[in-house]
Image (cartoon, rainbow, N blue to C red):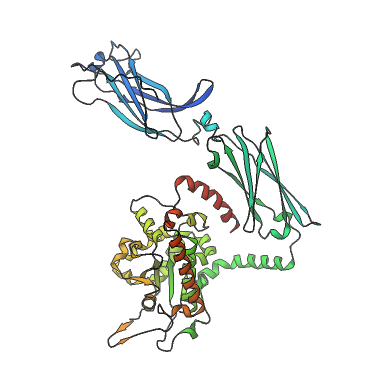
Length: 530
């Protein structure tokens, strides 16, 4: 931005008052045979006697992203307080060629400036991105693909003799992208082809699959352009392909399974009303695993709340639930194991229903603390918002934040205090991961204090006058001697080893805004095929 203002300025006694802002406008204009996005700044003069002392105005514009400045001075001679339309004098400057997404600090002062006082007005303006329809036709936005619509179509055919499915993807090309990457994937495969435009207005890409590869009805299709501005970070266009109509005829077994699922759907609501036990982990062998030294009188139920910080941490949570079920005979309620009902009820209703069930019984809620739990709690308290990679890829989304919104108010009530158990795996997490509201209760280190935690689940004191109760196979040195405990131990060790190799692992799971859009786009496939 050029700076056309002189640093030398005459200060006078008689000077006009300060201007007032009018609305700013965003648009495009033609500059040297190309369209550019512009910012139009408008200001008004006060209709007082100071207008007669006015010699001009000075406007300063600072681009905060590049620290570039522009300064322009206007000279005029006004002899009337109001313009010929009997309204206030209004001036504008539309010579600012703006960058999409940049933030500008704009200031205006009337000349000459007074000897004392600050009559300069200032405001911050964030120029919209290329997604705004007002500037999509600007050259810089066209070079980012703002107006590109590929109009994707797919055609499929089956060669039953060769056992092949052919998928032809057709789409329209764009002016400023020469290369395109076309990808098709499902849970079994991921194929990509790079194709050059070569002056073609439309392109066709053919994919060939063996029918034995197709275990699901849907595939995820995406087309990534490479525009000259955004290069490798351009917005992808996506679609879902359903190729089941092109399958060979289904077998009677598959038809029978589908029929059973339909019947099960009609019964789902009644089963949900009748019993909550279809959403928990059960173990028929749990009773015989109970030790002779301490007899568990009744099976307890635990709702597990956690943050999916990493795939390896999610595996630890699953293995812990398996251990609670197989070794301890505990019914475990976990979102991952109840996705069907969760999808019907919604996250808030699902959590609130289980909370009400637990608070009206002697069951418990177990909060497993981790870096993600602390980060999301701080975000709820006004800190920077966080998006975890695993939450984006999960069909369930972020389950922890709504859980904290529901549970914390109930936790701080003395009547509900005993329902909540707070714990963390000290090999892969720390006590610093515990949100502040839960610092008033005992925080159990797992698996060092797992036996004490289990006594809390049972509503039984581990330490009694003259004796200490024990349950064989639950101590830190013994829990891994059974198959489910060994699986849990191996999961903890795997994540601990990963953390040693990747000390900044959690920062790598946090998504910035630019990464979030890409991850959400790619996660559409996972959601569609779940």
